[in-house]
Length: 308
Length: 248
Figure 1: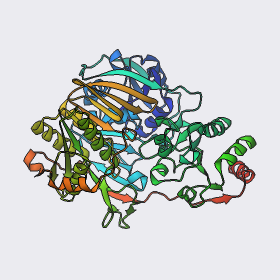
Figure 2 (figure 1 turned 180 degrees about the vertical axis):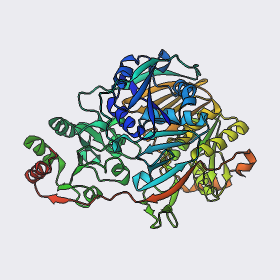
Figure 3 (figure 1 turned 30 degrees about the horizontal axis):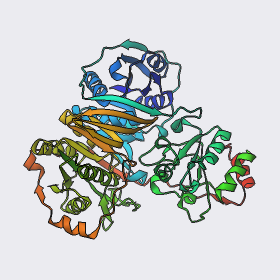
């Protein structure tokens, strides 16, 4: 069995955490070849080669792959697909965009957000916002899979796989990149952070989100948000934790002013320790919290920040 | 300009589903069913484009059991002009739905598909991307803004790092994210009007599509439940508990 793994490469940089977690999941299926594609990808490829369990790295460096457009990247993967039994990636927004396109071109299904590998054809994946876990068996000749990274440990480093440069595939020329609006932050990345502090509708405004951010900074944590907070404009979209946002499983998750809708719980209930701060003692978040504090967040959170 | 909007009938988002004790699936008997929320956003966006005069016709499509007509009537109550039901009792997986939609596109000749990024039942997040691939059209998934200009559509997408804007040549496939719009409330007069709008009924055989599932479900289980912990009285107690647990 041979596995082709699409590494998460953004602006030339490898997302080590997501990629290494996907490698540890993929290693159960066979020999892992990692594909790094980007306008710049050489550094990412070198770094990917150090992940233990990677047997080879393919580096496709071309302007065509600079802005994660689905059409050219899917065409590249399809051009390589012949040699592999499994085509996999961490379940990031990029991979969720690209892999179903690859699968349809190969006339196979995708196994999305896989949380466990049973055998080469059989996998576990959550449905209904994680309220049920399905064990599914694929009858397709090739398996296309995205792995939910929060359920796999990252593969160690220390490997020394060979890196092979490969040429670009044909350009379908169907779409063009216009612009990115991304905020840079010194905080840890949300899906790989050891501690996450999230705010919900209860925070009340964009300005008051500073209370959440101050606690996060004190803890060296990433900042998250509920859908309600993002919809209300208190927090940017890439902070959303939940069924259709990011799925996190940090050592400590602090939910502030979040009621705990099932869609939010789907994104954080695998956290090791959950703290809930909410003034409504009936809030469902308390049913999953290890430690609950029924209090007004505007006094409790600054007090907590001060006492840490 | 024609827009096709696929809509799926799913368990209502407020319902917490129960796994059947024999592990054969999820119990959806007598559970409230609704339109997939992302699809509702898709219908709303298509109707707004028609209201702006950019689009001339909005066609809602659903693949599945007879009761999907209710979902299609809802789409028409929001403002879709007509609807097509591809009726089947067979289990439909994303690849099969994408193939049905491709066949429909070849019959109807739309310039644009707007559809939900994922259904909240199987959480697959695949059908739009697969449809774009099968048609060899460009795709823009997870849209938070859609602007039509001549024969291109500019789409702002919600991605892991923030937002990204793409320009797609038409025809194209766009899948919706939560922030694209807030669907309108359906009014009674519009529900009455929707009952008179045309609804065509077809079957997968009419399109010559093989919908055989590729994935078989071996079992369905409950996730491990978390136990509720303790309620602390003060911030000091919380800090002490967190230290005790080694969390900070």
